[in-house]
Image (cartoon, rainbow, N blue to C red; front, side):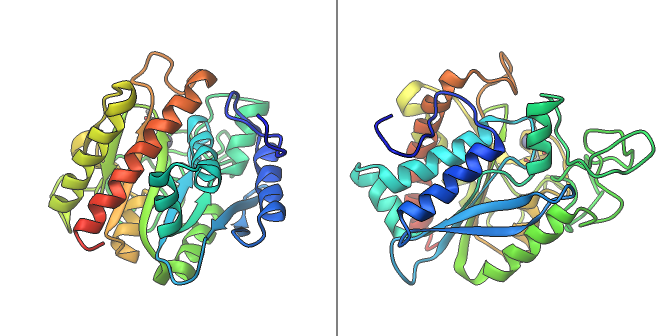
Amino acid sequence: TTRSESFDWTSYHTLEEIYSWLDSLSVKYPNNVTVVVAGRTYQNRLIKGVKLSFGPNKSGIFIEGGIHAREWISPATVTYILDQLLHSSEPEIRNLAESYDWYLFPSFNPDGYVYTHTTNRLWRKTLSRNSLFCSGTDANRNWDFKWMSAGASKNPCAETYAGRSAFSEVETKSLSAYLQSIKDHLFAYISFHSYSQLLLFPYGHTSEHLDNYKEAHAIGVATINALAKRYGTKYVTGNIAETIYPASGSSMDWVKATLRLPVSFTYELRDTGKYGFILPAEQIIPNGQEILDSLVVMFTEAKKFGY
Ligand code: PAY
Ligand code: ZN
């Protein structure tokens, strides 16, 4: 790269590298990039993100990455999106970037992400101590909407352990408080997971078609069609319960039900299982390109519904 920030999308980066890159952007672009700390983790790490803004009075899009530690393509995608929104000169990307305010958080689970670099590449949960034998809560089962009602476990050793109670985890508790504090500025929430190539929307606790299901489905179809154009990557769209499996207590469902944001989606990124969570780094850029293509259309379609 010719840029002075020594960061790139040809390899996966550590939490430390990601955080210093965010800091460097706020120093280099003080008018557009502000570092935001939305809380601390069980092991006392910062939960750091940025607000990206090109002017006053814009409605906000919140981008969540890395709630599951092993899904490394998720933080990589969030940093790719941030870089493109900041630097791309393509008219469609500039328009997307400058029409909204952006809140981008590459890692909602910093302890887990560090642990996948140091100790166990396939760790999913947080690192909180929950029993004599097992650590970690599934931070995507711990949010306080229909907590423990579907696809979640009471067993502290399970991958989908929902925690002692809703918002028992310091990460979800402080992130939800932060989201509440900015909710009047937000209309959209996107979370990135891997893998399976799905574009999910609420809800996961029931397969009923609630809220603006029809509009979300229409936006979803247009979005995955746009995604497929560049490289032919096929996604499927639908609500969580019908499209992947019933699952309650996710961040997206809480945001939809509590903050009432009309545009709420979760991407399950590449691939469909060949490499799974260990997606080769050569795919970071093509994956990022098709995701940005899809976001351009997602927000064009959302606008048609008045969102
Ligand atoms: O809200 O995204 C949701 C629910 C579905 C995801 C979840 O279990 O939280 C889907 C899984 C994920 O990304 O965590 C899919 C992967 C492949 C897994 O670990 O099962
Ligand atoms: Zn996940």
